[in-house]
Length: 110
Image 1 (spheres, one colour):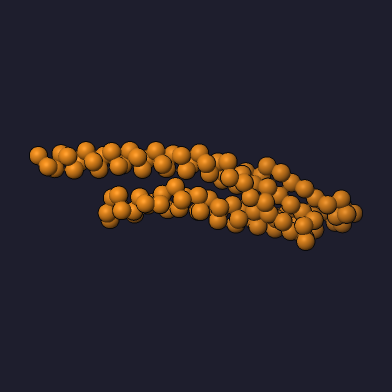
Image 2: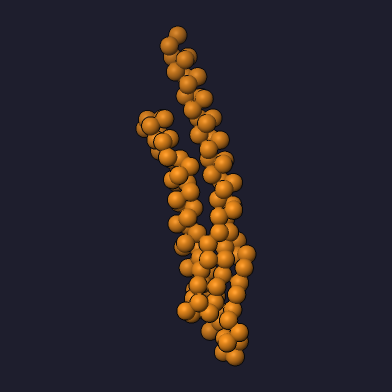
């Protein structure tokens, strides 16, 4: 009956892993990152999976053509998204550290 004990252990470990993944997802929703463009004249803040939560445009830009402002906003958003992805990757690595030895041969889905 050793097999049932092993299965119970694997199930318990899987539940622990699921709880850690849920915790990591909840934390990820609150992670923020700033992106900047134009030497700091445009700044955006993203949260979680890319939600734009803040936008700041230096008043000195308002006299320029709208297309320039739009391009800078896009560049700042791309910068923040890249930084956010890096922070989310770090958070997932921290949350899942040590899980690799728990289930030999199991690869995380990301």
